[in-house]
Image (tube, rainbow, N blue to C red; front, side, top):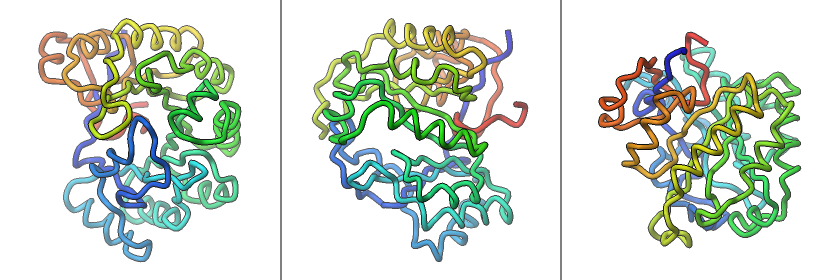
Length: 280
């Protein structure tokens, strides 16, 4: 069995928000809380110098994301030329998170040539409405992925297990939507009941449910790398050990306790798990 990849983004792969802490949505699981942990992007004119300063501090790449507009799209457009320039002149790798795809942004997105595009996929229309407050359906997410793949981009879907207050949230259906698309990787996140959000009192998602969904994805998406992402409750050593023992191909920021308990061989990658490792 090949070694599990351990992804350690940290200062080597910082997260940047193009909207600062602003978001037009008030999603039940987030409420813009996660934006507060990201670096606010400067105006587009200063973006290259900003990225150059991050490289001097040790960054080898970056995640470009942010809050959404009222249609669920991340307004990346003005920053995409800067992504291309950073790749060409600074040698930085880039992962961009687009939200629901704005097809008018496609030419700029293709030109930017990011190393990965992160997209959420939800398999239940009611969950999309109840959690995100969007008038969209699962097919909209699947079409976005197909469109991006059709232009030769590396598209990495994300499924959040227990997205709707830790209840089953269309995860099986989301996996089904990905069948036959040939996505290179699939990242599983797990709901974090976050203080100040509508779901702060939600129970923890059981490890059995998480492992079940990852196993299902392995069976139904042959050739797709399965990852356990960074958005998950911290301190769940049992789940991390199962991941390191081969439940997934990669895991982000496992605890020292899990690494010590497992003792499995692993390859360290200082990047987001959506980014292909240098050995891939």
